[in-house]
Image (tube, rainbow, N blue to C red; front, side, top):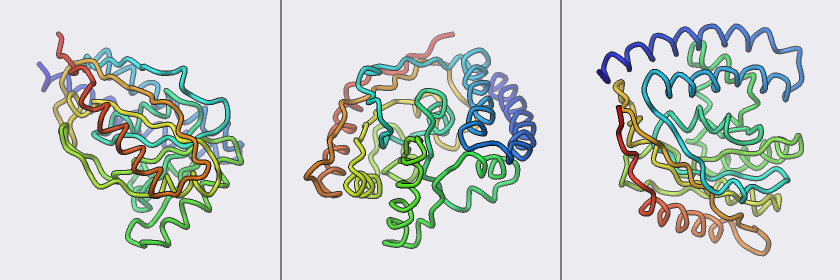
Length: 240
């Protein structure tokens, strides 16, 4: 049954991706925020399909921790689910992504219109400068900045190396950090075609004030909170 559901979902998502890539292209005359609202219609529909086709639901805990001003979200990275859902669940965000994603047919073309922060991850310190320079601009425009500090998706129960890009941006701009833990990888595994029904828990942590802290200190604080909470999340219990 999961195979059939996943196949139907894949067909519908592919169709939506092509359609919204055209919508994104036609939205170029609009402001960045207007484009964002229009293009993320894709995200809302995909998450809706994930619920009704795949049986993947979600709950969000800790919304009261979200600050009023634009902030830097540092989140666990387990699957493609959060890359879609977080653009629906939070104020307008500018995600930090790999430059090469912008060259992916249809998907990348649409992403260009979403005001992402595209960096060359192989550029070392230069990539950090790109995050800070572009991140300052996005925050000033009223966008939040979304960073997956592990850089790549990791399987449930595993931990990647936390990069300091998000902490560097926070230390430089003074923008607060919002740490997020979730278990999306349990139902939408990395690079897996077959998704499983279940309930994802997204847990938003208390704001981390960057005042007087270095990028390394902020990164350690984020890592400690996220990895501790990952052990406390309820299982993404399957249901039919």
